[in-house]
Length: 334
Image (cartoon, rainbow, N blue to C red; front, side):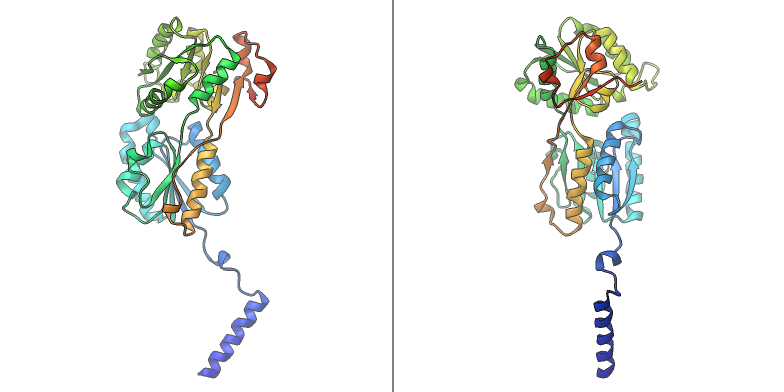
């Protein structure tokens, strides 16, 4: 028996010395990651987050995506979340990424937070982390903060006469989150802020825009992609921005990349790619054994200056060359 064990040991050592066995990293299967997105697959913000996730995890993990579609069908969100949990149970992922606030309230908090051992990283969360009881035993992630103050400052570099700004956002969960952020920060903005106006549809947005025209120097539109018309149809992004621009006749800005590309003047843009990439890097650490207590909640810090030159020229704005330095210049997309 001892002789047999000795021969077997020699054989194993021989294979190892010849490199006959693959390294452990090859033997082990790649981790499985479930990504739960709050909105639909065509949403530009979710597409940015997905790009960030795949920049880190593609080729390193098996990724499955599920979409709760809450931007256009919030009442069905709970049912989509229930199905996402059924997928979680069947897929048995090694880690979860949950994007935006609705994925937290509808999926992570009721199904995963402190209930499973699977590490969960959130991203794109606009509310305070404590609203969801984060950090939790198995949850950390990256918060999302819109660069509203920075976008106002960029606008004033283009149009120094701007002293008073107005805000319009849909009357939905995302609109309420933006409203709370503005109310927290407005005292520190470089322009006076009028109260945030929340609207139920595009017709109401037009009416409010006309009202605000004489009371403000600039208008800030936030999360308008969910806005529907009075017939409950979903207008194209460009149509929403073009319609409101025609009625306002003054600078309109935002905080998102696609808003500027589709017809608004300027923004310091937050990055969905940063959100997805950061959450993925945090999840990789957790899946390879780093305790979540050593992976603290963080906040986005990247910001990109963007100016739509089509809109700038239509408003007769002629900025100093230094204002354009380090800024991405785009034209309104057709």
